Image (cartoon, rainbow, N blue to C red; front, side):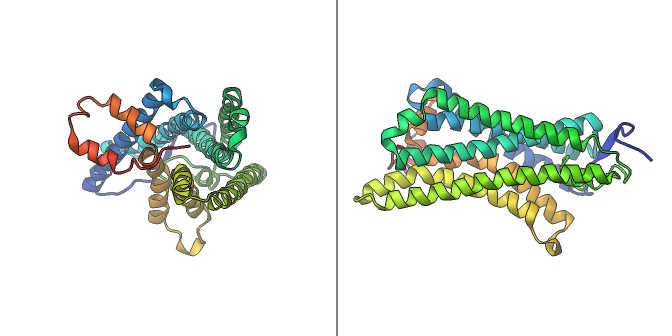
Length: 326
């Protein structure tokens, strides 16, 4: 009976058996990865270098870009390597590292999105207390808590999952290392139940954050609708809609990927959904946030050489310049 200590490698799920489609997957992943790296890299540079972006909202946006970069750099390069070289293997230690960093960045991103929701709630519902509740020290503590929670969650799940004896082969039904597919290879009933217990506890914490986000936005919308002027309502909504769009994209794809009905489950659908929630948010988040953030767009424009002489780019960015953030 092979176990985790004697297993040298795992077999990942290939995107296709046809060489042409494998190369197509490689180029698609390469294009999306470069877009995500460029978008998040611009946000990181703009927030770090522009004094006008040293606000709590932009501070958390910087950390969100870091988690996006971490998520896409953890799983996509290995998938690109396998598609390019027509292989499906990943080493045991490589699989453990991939699972750890995947959980680390994904959990940290979820908690950062929850903190950013609190930032919008305070900015709109308690504007007079914004400087007190979201001072520089409070922001640093909240960001550190998000990263620490991600680290602790990843450490517990990775340590427990890879301590299980594995006796059901080494083929994973996914293009990256994921807990449910590793658990299917386990032959330890007690270890399996222990990991399920950890998953239940983690889901409960995530559900509490989800309830907090829903409650916060209910209060935000109630406060916005009480604003007498239509221009004021539009300005307030413009600061919330990017965050709401990012949260909806992030949560909806993960919920559907893991809680979809069993009768519609298939390897192809699971593969497509995994690509959707792993690759789409890191690539789209910079675009979503930059469209409604005038200060961020101004900072990016200053960083792009030759921008001032390009009228088309001025017109493109100018289309979304009606509202300034709170």
